[in-house]
Image (cartoon, rainbow, N blue to C red):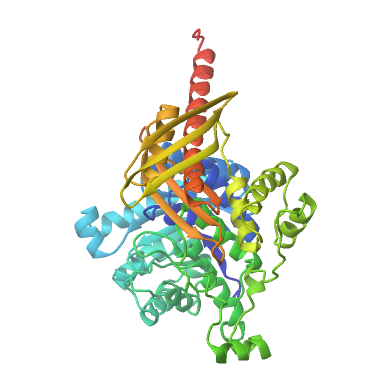
Length: 520
């Protein structure tokens, strides 16, 4: 049997369904490009029938991504399948992924259908999808709680109908490794045409067993694993891509398997996802957590200094974590900054370097030394910046134990300098209300988080906000040693995104009216 494991990344679909992890179209494309650099085999770009935004994101990813298969999810419904095909038909390697639940629990309480009806729906959906797209994947939702005889019947029938990938998910994270592995073993033994399809696993982490179940699956003949960066996903999340990839690489002598993942892109991919969604990984997260390669105990430190293999089963460099500590400061020039970014694995255009250098200089005036973590935070803040309709030029906040927090904000708008003040429940609230008074745009803050990206009393803080403007959510982020200034800049980035989006929509409406012969 082929020892290659195909990595099916569903960060943009199942992962994005995780509360707080939604991304806009541009952010999805940016992450998809990074997944391409990571060398995943399949990118499940979304669920096109879910919304216009999801459809547009899948369509854009399908058009721009060339080296990965791009999949779109669809229920066993004609409208879903048509919409999925419309979204991915421009892809170099398109795949329709259709699914229906097969467990008696789901049939009784959710679908209210008989086994025979579900089997007919599954076969019809695969046949119809196959008439549109050469590559079709079929999933038996809640497979791990499905009667094994019925499961085998559905698998055999859908392979006959044209499915070339069969996914048997542990949808609710209920299985334990030996029984999940046994399910695949029985399917391989009892389904006569199983050699015509690739078996796939898709595990959720409700019991903390998603990665263990995925490994059990590949030990029992599965050759595609569905997973997400940082293990994000509904409820407790999905199987973690980085953990699966490194388990297969680190324990090659035991598993005898391989993936095509470029593991040195793992850390960068993880950091990008955290930056886009604001969902940070816990410090003790395997592979990509801040403590994954940290050693505090004296015995451990002594062992690592003598030979890293004593306490590190993989090197930090193998997942893209650079331990070189070149210190940059306010006297460093563009060339030194560009060189350091190159060493960290980033290739910057002149425009990207200019934006990063501008923010670098601002922070270097406040912070004596900037380390690699600071540079990555600066890059994430500057590289994704929205068009600056409003720019923060000055902020002054007065607060205290017995004082009402008051913020005075100065913004640049075109050639104008506008100043106003406001009070609030706290200094950040006061700053945001002052911005609202100046711009006349009212937003509702739905998420606000701060994290330190390096150590020391002058560490850079990275602020992430998600703001609701007229029912639409926009993200903003900023890095600064001054948390209040960073909070204001992050809010302004979200506001500028909202204004840019509104402007684009108005221009599209004018263009549409013009094409229809309407004078505007």
